[in-house]
Length: 113
Image (cartoon, rainbow, N blue to C red; front, side, top):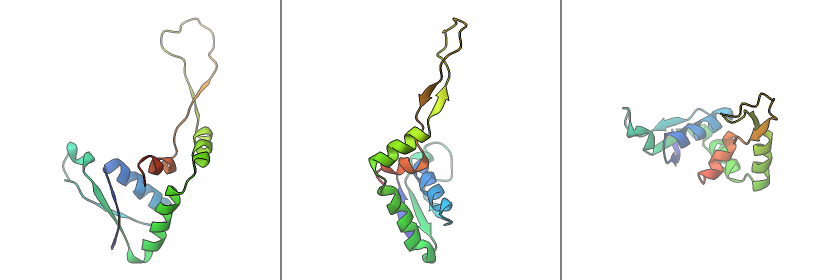
């Protein structure tokens, strides 16, 4: 196994592990206590098999190279309809609105990876 990168917390580690998994790479995430509570906020180290290291590095690098335009397109494509606010009881149907939902790839840009 070879060290690939560190994640600031469990959430980031999960995103990185999922991204690697989508590329067919099985990561090993280590770090943090195995108990409950604050363990989600403790950094995690991510390792991959030696033969997967270069490809894993490329997967993470590709996520960093996502342009702002690509992120905007992904955000628009992932929009989901919303429901009306509570207390709006006029009995008329509501026009659907949109709430942008980020794709997994976008989170790496948010976290600076």
